[in-house]
Length: 211
Image: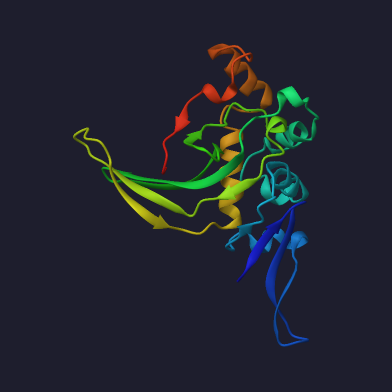
């Protein structure tokens, strides 16, 4: 099934239309719970704010699946910011983090910040959502599998793997990252404990390229 998320949080999917006896693209935004396990593409102008406001429209269904902090971050992403407060990253990216260590295998979607001319992936766990609300969100389907040896040797990567994203994965990656330190107040308190807000929030821990 083909499905795409458009700017403004509009979800369109290819569904069977008995009237024309063929599949047609139509707006399924109000039916989001039925499409959580469907592969999705994101329009290149879909922003973090679009995703959070879409989640808000279906909060009663999504809260039990993800986090009861959703409302706090929806309130934050709606708050205006000054030009000086805007995050200077070029875009946000959802990719796959995959590794094996001993008997443990982990594959999960993660949200990071990126710049077009910079290969580094930046953690955005401490960045207020309203300062990066305007950033487009991209999907990186290709990833590397890393095997972590019990002997402590560096991980051996297997690159050029690929996995598409379900709509569930997109929400999972976004909400897991922005709620990592709790609600916005807890996040800001954590940041004050490790350094002043006068420093660039992106100076925190970073994810390795290809994760």
